[in-house]
Length: 469
Ligand code: AMP
Ligand code: ZN
Image (cartoon, rainbow, N blue to C red; front, side, top):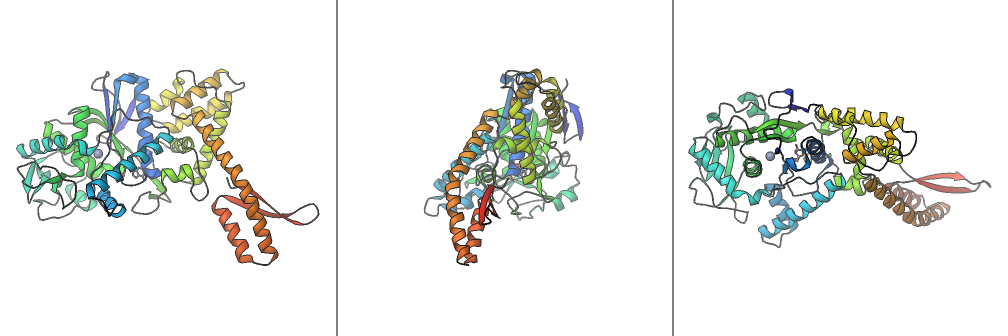
């Protein structure tokens, strides 16, 4: 078995050779903590969790270091803090927003079966490293100070644009790069900028006398350097991060440390889409992980089903997100868990081989179906292999069963109330108050309960209900 991974930089699927097999190092760009994460944001978290599990399997649990940062300094955080806590000093409000959001994020991705990374550094705890890199860049002629900003001098880096494989003109057009009076060239990007009054601020690099704050890209270069060194094995994130974020990280780190590479392999997941468009906050076509877990339009799914739905597609391809896909994943997983033996050991080699082929999860899913078909008796070889495979993939029978039990209990507790509402609706219909009877039907529909009007054995009208699934 040889692990092969597709590298965005060389555009090739190549055998993976860690710099040090005793210390395999991966960095993945994490969330900006200002609001609930949507299910599109969950995709990189799940994809790189599967890779983390595979690397631990191949190199040993103690020989893989996975760093996923938390971006806790950002305009969106400041805006949210000012809006939600207008009475508090901004710094305190920001702390409330970031702490709360970080907790929500952890609860959500735990429910999706993702292991915690080895280190989860916060940007605001790495300002010294950011300043150090910026000083190196200034000293080497790769950055300049202008009007209390520090800018990266893109023209100083002959390799700039290699990751995104775009010409300067394309990059300028594609990124809608800001033209600003402090930029010597429109392509140059911000490493450090002045803070507005009340905003988080730190002593500035480059001899700037006023306080300031870092740009976004420098955060990741600093955290990767601190926790993984000047060069490491894998850098990951969603495909939208290739340009400008990863191109800029690469430029900063390579120029600061005089290296030709930052990571040996650059990996990017495709978009999770809704009707052909990227799911995003700005388009408003998003649903949060939390809503899917706890109730969205009267429906919800266990995290394991959402995780399994994600695995039906290879990570580089776009996923079209649909409720039908969640339902299918739920039903298949329920069936798998009903016959799988409790996990007792290593996953079957066929599963590892499929994953080693650039995380070919659709092939893994096919292997699971094949194993499922072979199960004759509980505890037979296929049932054991299936149980071990599911556990290895982070799909947890106990967590799934607990979710189902809770959902059933809540359906039962709702039932009494549903019967009352049905009686109210019958009374409304009897007095020809159809506005009220429709309102009750809609209220139940919003809770995922479908009413069926029929007649009983004596021909009297009777209404039954069922959970829409
Ligand atoms: P953001 O909060 O937008 O910086 O995104 C956090 C992570 O989620 C990044 O790795 C993004 O590339 C990724 N991401 C955001 N939206 C999507 C999406 N619709 N599909 C897949 N990945 C996404
Ligand atoms: Zn990053």
